[in-house]
Length: 196
Image (cartoon, rainbow, N blue to C red; front, side):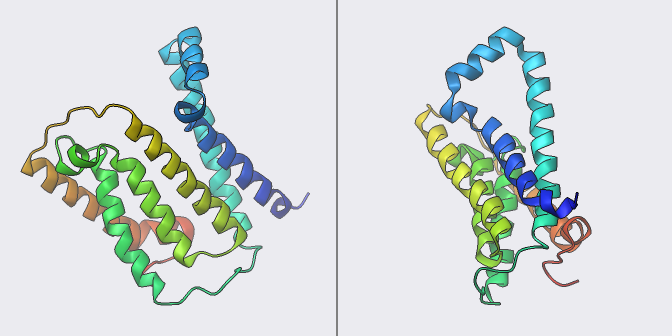
């Protein structure tokens, strides 16, 4: 069988698996809690991680193959590529804020990782315009909007912040942005955001 014929179904299955698992707190919290109680935390986390990894790998493979098969649905202005590069820097800061302790971004926004995914997906939809792009980036954008709304309904957890934690967050985010933009994006995905 032609592997390209499996590309779009693999992408769809990966999105359903990965985003579905990461949506259990939104759509099925009682079921999630019941499985956690039945399996125990260690087994639940193990199975959850394995299934998430399988979904992620299906997304990567399916998207890499499917984007070679589908023509753009519309023409994106070339200047939007600069907007994407600009938007991705705060997306990396927000992602770093989810992991670096005691920073003002996390204390203020409460859910910086979800906002990072939202910004990443929106930015990439500006310049990626085929059916696989819409499925991948549109799927993550809708998921991150729903997850952010659900998370905001819960009581915020008090978080302290320091200037040192915030500066470290910005430094880590900027370093990650540079590493990804100038090397990893091209090496991993074959697309060089700055053409170098």
